[in-house]
Amino acid sequence: MGKVNWWLWTKMLVVGGGVVWGGPALVRYLQPTDEELFQRYNPDLQKRSLERRYEREKEFDDFVVKLKEQAKSDKPIWILQAEEEKAHAANSARQQKLAESLRLAEEVKARREAMRKEAGMPVESGSRGK
View 1 (tube, helix red, strand yellow):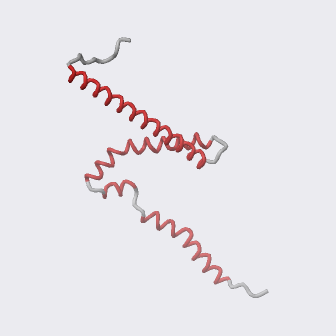
View 2 (tube, one colour):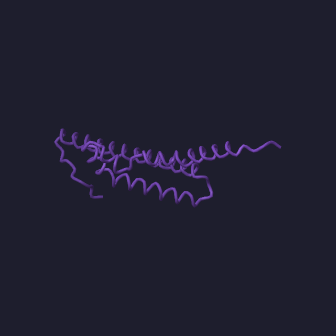
View 3 (cartoon, helix red, strand yellow):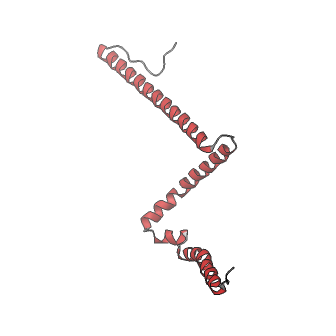
């Protein structure tokens, strides 16, 4: 076997250590903190950011709670999320249909009252006495 070049190995270890530890240290040193970024915002953005902070924190907390619940299941999380999304879409569609039918019922009621007024008949008030 050949002679080991210790000087080469020493240089490589020093350079490797510089890259492995020095690179992340440099990034950490140069990267601004959240407070520093916030101070760089213009006053209008700072105000909006503060107003929406509670809302964003609540959304994130809800997301984490959902993830924890989904993690308890044996199914993969992406399958559970897809199922939940489908159920939410179906529920949303059901609510839209219900809202549409309520709107149509109100429209029919308004037409009926308009026709009664035109005919000179008394207009129904509120609920029926059945």
